[in-house]
Length: 104
Image 1: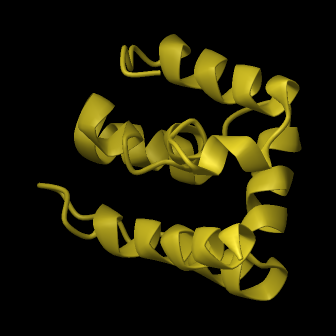
Image 2 (image 1 turned 180 degrees about the horizontal axis):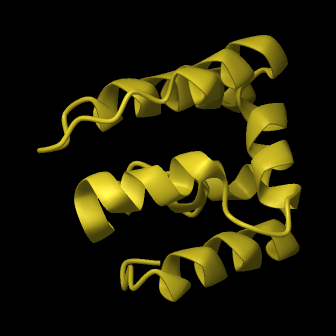
Image 3 (image 1 turned 180 degrees about the vertical axis):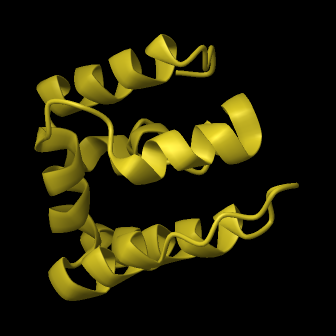
């Protein structure tokens, strides 16, 4: 049940990016979420050695506010964090801190 809610919330991240002062259309992200499902999409994005292009674009479009619309930020929030391993959460925190997001 939580994973199903997480999927819907992951789709909503796309719409949140559109609300930035400089809107960001993460169409490849949305396609990935719809293709794999929210949890598997997050797993894939967190498994890469570097932040995704979308993560970088969110930063460029909204600085640290933009990063609050990222998967990395999202997976650290309750109740979603319970779906992920400590290693995945550490990766998310490290990426956010590297870009100056103190909310990680």
